[in-house]
Image 1 (tube, protein in one colour):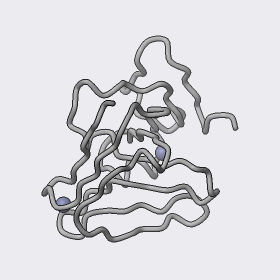
Image 2 (cartoon, rainbow, N blue to C red):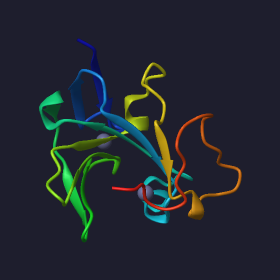
Image 3 (cartoon, rainbow, N blue to C red):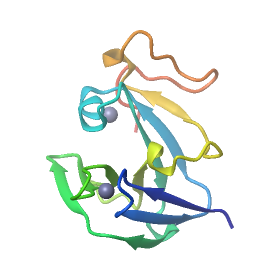
Image 4 (cartoon, rainbow, N blue to C red):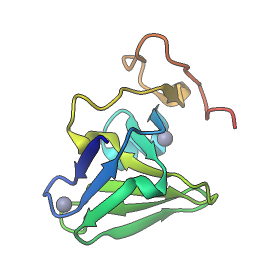
Length: 133
Ligand SMILES: [Zn+2]
Ligand SMILES: [Zn+2]
């Protein structure tokens, strides 16, 4: 079984995930831009039971009506998040794996607020707004 480790910038907050992700999603919404400091965010979704180990302390930031983010209190990297709607799914920051073998995005969302120079990988579904339910 594939094991992958995600870590914050300082290395204090770490997650170990078992198996392949359910979905990898790139998002160009303005909230993802502000949270990441980048032009888009990448979320790697897993089932909660795939998170087999966590190390280090985390602080939380709740985006009302949406998501609770866990981030490293020392360096501020957000690493892990849960959706408010009780879906049995967790999100992990794509860049935190620093692993070129991680699958690329399966979809790109909120391209309507994305920068024009950000383009999607060929052949994946692209949504100007949120993806359909
Ligand atoms: Zn850190
Ligand atoms: Zn977003």
